[in-house]
Image (tube, rainbow, N blue to C red; front, top):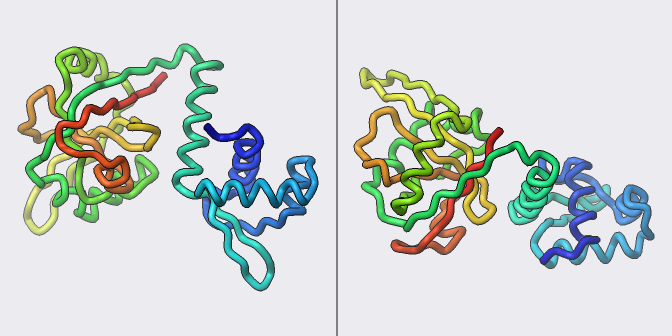
Length: 222
């Protein structure tokens, strides 16, 4: 569990712009923002770096700090908790299933420039060229039927090199705190108990997943 003071410091670095890239940040400036001593601020930066929530680099004009993906996911989990506290009207669904191997088509389609641009603009991340395929259990197949109005984003089709590529729709979600999205092509041959998930990185590797592993997909929407 993240210590409260580390989380407070991580949040302040994010408010100063640390999720967008490296920012100039001295122990003194962080201390002033948090109302603590420079020595305490320095210890907190070291602790955040040790937990791999931030990366630090030194340049001629001073220290630069950036929040890592692990740090951002920690903040997103904290945000999700506050949503449940202060916005209970938001609905949350959980789909449970097992990881399976796909047919390899996702890698091809996720590598097409048009799709990559559309997904990046709609989801805020450029998809890894490939999808995580999940076979839903019987109960989750029924839950999935309630998701038609859960905030899907349409991705238009296009024509390139005299070939027509169909559209799709995506639904933002999370797996073990990782930001990702269910993608549903308009032209799909998958049965209703199979979903494909995309993310900005290879989920199998990041989450150490293998075929037949059980996994939960969380969807929250208004």
